[in-house]
Length: 385
Image (cartoon, rainbow, N blue to C red; front, side):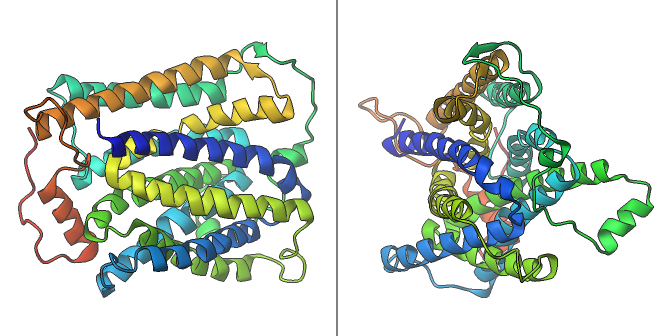
């Protein structure tokens, strides 16, 4: 396996570790009632200020010229991966609860895998052992994440304390209560608030999946991944600002406490700027399906960091679920490596020729034609295996 592939796998593991730390750091800071829309706006704005100058100078010689088609693609990436991903999660959380919201997050790898296969960015041959291993590994990985959320079991590390949480704290404080024709129309159809929350949470998963699946072929046309990420944050911040102006109290919601400012700094620098930049780079090397498959590691890292820094116990369900996640990731990684070996081949001295996982040139160009208006796209999809 090439050095870039190992670095990408390590990078995605670090991304999920930092995401787990984000949940631990903001767990207390965001209980004071800060508007989640305002928090996300500040977080993404800080990330934009960090990424923009770095991308401008670092990729000044390699950045392709901007076209109208590229700008529309960047807008769509910002709409799905930044704005839609975060806002739909917040709305869904306000109508359900954190436990149910976390239970739906493992659907992101499933939606990403399906979208990537449909777009031709990823391949799966169910008649081959490697293709079946990819599907089985994805199911095992997602099942492990769901098990961690739904099954607790006895405490194996640390001591369990009885903590009574008021109902008012189960919902995240400061959530925007959306209103308008969409919410009213759905409620008129007989859909209750909890079902509305589920719909929005599924939309959140689909948005993140679309972001990863669309970004991969775009990176082949526009390989400056830092600039692409910065443009995505720019459009996401603009959309977040517009919505925040209509859904927040300008006199009070925009003032943060010291703990909230510290949480914004961590979220903006690490969770947004660093993590999204790494995700974009890894997406170019590993492909969207494998990148999304690291998402279920997040609750495991969160449980581990909670035990280290907050003294929270680690339960049997977390250990079993974490083991399944690691097994599923290894299975998919092994299958992808075997497929890449079969496609790229082995050199005469036995070393593997380094090549990105996304190797379907015609399919990738076809996807570029859809989102970038590429004139050299192949008119016929490539048949796989």
